[in-house]
Image 1 (cartoon, rainbow, N blue to C red):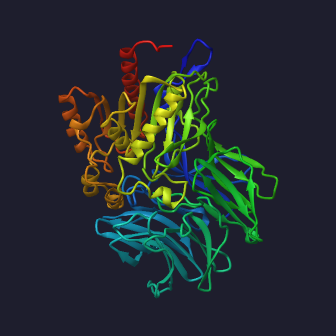
Image 2: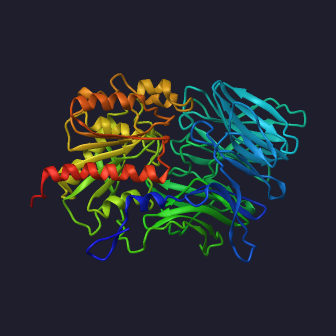
Length: 594
């Protein structure tokens, strides 16, 4: 931590890297709350909290948990009877339950315990299998196989529900919910199609106590909640808002069934998340929370809801929220790696910028102190089928505390704005997203928020591709930073993980590749040598070609790093390299004029 002249603190790159505690995969069982915690202190571990314990302490339940199902993961643990834990080992990808462990050349995930069995999905290069396991004997039974994808198995009273999609589509474009009887024989009955089609994404099936099956579908253009009962389907809470998160991982829970026919549910309008309760009479009541982002992991604790929330001034925390009208909140877990309280936080303004006939939402973070005409970093988010998170991001604060403004752009193709906006980027990747980032930068220049000649674009993964494409044409950007970037979407369609290969094919076009001869501004490339989502080969070639043209600022190749720079040392090095690249441009440009 560095002190500045104003008596406030400026976080170092190492501070930011060490502050990376994350909570995921929240669930509940027998009155206890469970989650996966990722932090420098515990690594990746299943944790639990017992509300009846006087100490209210968290207990380590299992170490080294992590699923690579479909490249991005699926529910990596399940709570068995007597509070035992079955989990997916991050090191082997196998299911471990007590002393028993699977031994196969598969990646496992989407663990769920119901109807006295452990259900999961496993994957290999040929496709997916839905598996029922007996943790006591270690016996596995394959119930369904496909060359496509399976997810979200959940059973109730002898019936099993799951989701399924073809190998040439993404689950947020076309996904189906199926139901079949299951019995002691280890075979499924004839599957019944509940929801989903080539232009409908149906996700997150969940059984009600009365035998109804709930799910989320975007059949109206918005992911909303539906109920299937006795062969008929009805809308539960229709609204023009997104009530599901794009299923990058399997096992999300954007809604939770409460006692007395009530339902808790996340609702997303653009970058803002809310928690609502759908009452038994179908009226909808919002719960007042201090959070603007709620992760897609809700869990029921009686008539209370456990959630993972954050805001621009609060790091991720786990809280239990009352639904009785009091809106009382009990925070049960906060990150221990907090940055010094005297750091002056930059709180974003939500802006709308007109671009290509659409309103593009922007999270604009002014520099600490609020100065105008600041050097500006435009950040297209990763995904690209995702959105900018409205929560405390210490990487943003690293730059705003040093006098930079930051603009996070929800370009066309982002989630949180309905199906039509989400699919607008199909066939136009590297075009519409670049146009939106360009127009946001021009708006901020024209409004006096940004300094001419000091506008940068920085992104990771798909955002890194957008950044590279942005400096392949004239515009306001003086430099691009591309971390873990895709370089050639068409080639990526053959090298990407099986899950994401259709994503590349859907988004790409004939001139999608980033070619060094088209690049017009300097580029900083940051890439892990063990990146299996965006392999480093294309980046190495691009770096060599850019170096020949004197446009390579630096290639920071990080050893033993994957697609995400989760190692604190790697992340700190990336932040320092990015800051150095900006500083060199600013030094060359000289003092700001006016």
